[in-house]
Image (cartoon, rainbow, N blue to C red):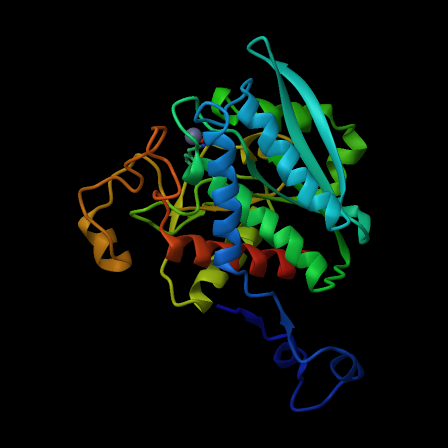
Length: 311
Ligand code: DPN
Ligand code: ZN
């Protein structure tokens, strides 16, 4: 699905064609993100887990293998990547940071999600889903020749499952000046839950500027004719450190161990009285534990929000 931004319409003043309108493209289109490509990245994460004792957890070989694989794809697409090391629970952890060349480095839009799984399983929905979607969107920036005004940076966080360790380490490692250059952070953690809900992070209680991000994500779902609910994810994912630093935050989520109500099942389909993700933090969080429609819609909404925010 493709989401169009009606820029030309917004520039039309009383039927007059302004110089700006004449120079602008008819519409700024975020690319339609191929869910098949996202699923192929998920298969890669599954293979990495299978070859490394069944998981991609902090301190286990499947985690570093995940970092190295994502990094190789980004390097080949011309991103500037770096691996940031930290220590947690006596093991070395890694964040992967990838900068898209160009844009105003004083005005940075950042997107991220955690790349580690729990030790119980391969972590395909949690959080292969967000990780794979962000990777595909990064690759499509390059493939479509997107040249945003703002600078775009991605983060794949380590040791989220140990208490948001990697993202917290990253934010704390930034000089005050670098922190103030980050104007928005968008987080994607679990975007393909099998019994999916469509949740957008609530801006309530978050730094000012978060409401615009919330509304942009809501608008993306509206254009796909998908109803959403707001959710307060609080300190349950990697946006928390950014919010504490005063950076506007937003994100989407398709649900974890919570139970879908009958009102939600009527709105979204799926099964009432059942968890959004029955395999949450379990060995069955494999490539079978993914709702391809939810994965697809969220990937398209992420792209929509990125193209609109960084333009
Ligand atoms: N942080 C997720 C996990 O890794 O377990 C769960 C979660 C994600 C909860 C997003 C709420 C919102
Ligand atoms: Zn988790």
